[in-house]
Image (tube, rainbow, N blue to C red; front, side):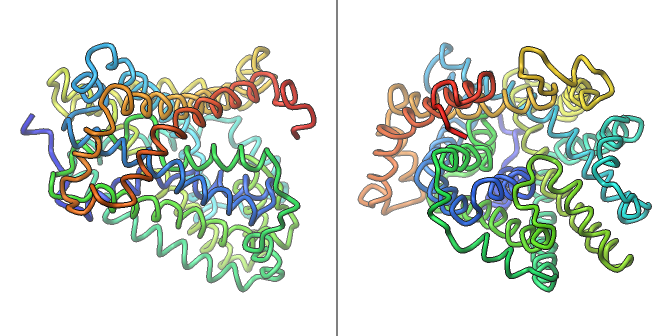
Length: 463
């Protein structure tokens, strides 16, 4: 086990773990959910969910990993026996399928970066039609997604310090620099103040059950919880580090990116009054139109920078998603890291091809009869959403019923001399014992009902 690798210190771990959390969910999904759910009131619910539910789950995952110094499967097996090992396998499989569709969307963003920066995308005119044709034709998307997967594998194959940590030390600061630069520019646009008001001034009349539901789901998805990524990263953390404070910094870093993304996006869309645009249309259609209305050179620079930001955010997440199954085979099968990484990268890329061709190229995958006519990529993405909340629920039960809160406390006290007498200990225990399992079980059930039947089945008038 000596050749597993480890982070060089607290900064390397925090940047890598924050990079795992920061991704497409922060810069694409968060703004469109905020737009659909009243802006500032959604932001408030999201922040509450992050620190009241998701932060304790993050602490628990990291503690499990550091205690066992093993991959997700090995961690659960070591602490709970072979029967609990299935939860680690469940998380590993979830990570594989998340990466299979995530890499496709990352390929779209990479393609848009190239087309805006060096092509003629901004003169397309009808950006909705352009995007539809773009994702329907995989002649370019195939190579863009493949390039993204190759870059991910190149980084992960270099190991924990020279690959994962080194890449995040470069990309995370660059991500913040680009994001802040785009915010400064977006605030100079016409009607920017209307977008800022919508985003930062809560209208409590917009508070609905759907707002709470979407805020909780987005918070959990945003932090990459429930799939073993933070267990894996925690296993590379030395015993001198304070898990409680490190998890707080990671949560703040992830939340700050989502917050700043909204501060960047809403001034841009204010002029088009497109606050409630959902899904890929927000960044690939609406914002493309915003960039096209700028001076041609400015549009290329700002639009190219925006999609480069998306690429950085996606890459920091794809790295962690690939590391989860790679760590399993390195730890459990003793296979070489480079061989495992490249083999898994190829397998996951192939698994992503159905998602790639489900955007119109193959009609049977474009409208699934058993899934309310949605496409295959959406189906995989939604099933991964379910797997994350279910994984978090089961992890909470595992900590309380099998590993024990006492054992978790002892692990968290290492590197934190004041933990045992702190209010944080009480807070984590209460959330883990009485809130997390029940709330995540309910959330998992509601997501399943929503995706397969529509929430109106059990909550008439929900929408």
